[in-house]
Image 1 (cartoon, rainbow, N blue to C red):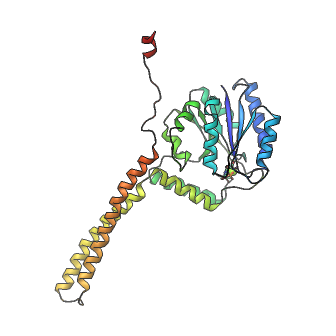
Image 2 (cartoon, rainbow, N blue to C red):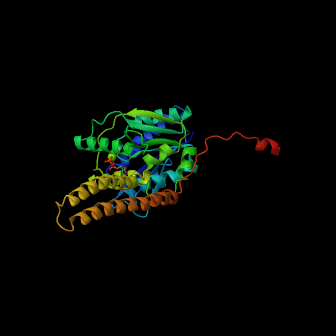
Amino acid sequence: MKLSIVVPCYNEEKVVEETARRLRAVLDTLVEKRKIASDSFILFVNDGSCDATWSIIERLYVADPHICGLSLAQNSGHQNALMAGLATVTERCDAAVSIDADLQDDIAVIENMVDAFAAGADIVYGVRRTRKSDTFFKRTTAQAFYRLMSLFGVRTVYNHADFRLMSRRALRQLAEYPERNLFLRGIIPTIGYKTATVFYDRHERFAGESKYPLFKMLNFAIDGITSFSVKPIRLISSMGFIILFITLIMAGYTLVSFFCGETVEGWASLMLSLWFLGSVILIAIGTIGEYIGKIYVEVKRRPRYNVETFLHHDDESAK
Ligand code: UDP
Ligand code: MG
């Protein structure tokens, strides 16, 4: 089986060389153990870096037949860079492992991923055993994120980032998702093929800084939820109905006050129209939202189903 390892890199001049060396060692070991083919390779994707990352990749490519490079014209973001790499290797390997350039994920479990693939899994998720190496802040925000995702009905794998193996079949299926707002962690569980999980401990970055500052993380979380769930829109309609219910109570209260003569002129009519119009407007926005939600699902053009196996006699009858 021919393996490829896809590594997105953005301003990673401090790490690429060392990363290449370590990943090469993993490839060599796996080739030696006859678990992967000798023409397996590593693909570095340069995501529009402004430092020396690409020139280092070029140098590595010239020196080593097992190293390839792909350079994007400009910075397109981690998810797009990863997708570019995966699309490039789809027809060039039997399975691809994606991993961050900083090697915070444990490269030793790539072997377990390959084993799980050999045992029949199409997608193997790398899952962090603990979040000990994270700061308190990152840990709690990450947990809140996973909770929010499941509250909104988005299926994700808990504590899994983009460290995973995918078979060629799964990669081809991934190509059927043409959406622009990529949130791979949400898309891949919807592919539905046989999956497996390997556990590992995440390390600190060995050099360089995180390319995911807080605002990028927040954007990523919002992207994740809004790409997979129209529930926020439903909340508007629900709120409209709740306020309509309150309107009825308020109408009773207002009318009683009015007929008891405890009100100043104009108050009762104002109160009634205020509440009523409020709920009508919310329900109207929610209704429009329902249609927008439908349009949203349509324009994403995700596949309706993914075929896993087709047993047929076509070829035999052709003979
Ligand atoms: N990355 C990328 N494009 C970007 C930002 C990040 O390709 O615009 C890559 C980066 O080089 C690294 C991976 O995405 O290989 C994950 O980034 P990082 O390690 O900085 O994120 P963290 O681990 O801190 O969440
Ligand atoms: Mg990192």
